[in-house]
Amino acid sequence: MKYSSSEKTLLRELQRDCSQSLAQIAERCGMAQSTVWRKIQDLEASGTIVGRVALLSPAHVGCKLTVLAAITLRDHAETTVSGFAALIAGHPEVVECLATSGAADYQMKVRVADVEAYEHFMTNTLLRSPFVREVQSSFVLKELKSTTELPL
Image: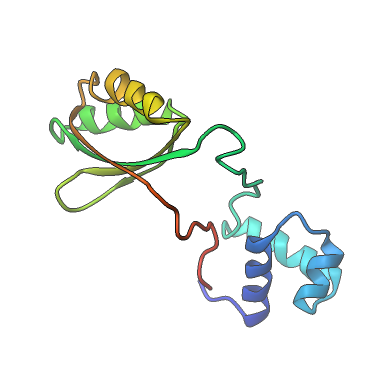
């Protein structure tokens, strides 16, 4: 979808901080409040804006450890793929799960309190699942960049 320069400015501002008042957003974008309100409504209706959230500090809410897990399924039957998707959907510690090309079938980002919590999740959830053949885990040592902002 094509966006005007003013819409891109608005989207960048909303990604940066959507908790601002309409007046603050309008001022930062150089638009009238009514225009900002209308554009936001249009962007939501078109599916460009899919939600508004508060981003939490993982350390402050007890999720200091980030693990990247490469998952290989036992097979690619529809029941295996849908069963794995249902398994992952039921676990809030999995904050991202992506079907990928390459050696692994999926890459997951898991946020937990510590190594013991991840070991429990991996052993009791992933490795005991009839859908999972292999899990290779990488522990994040330092986060150099983390953003939810898309480049516009």
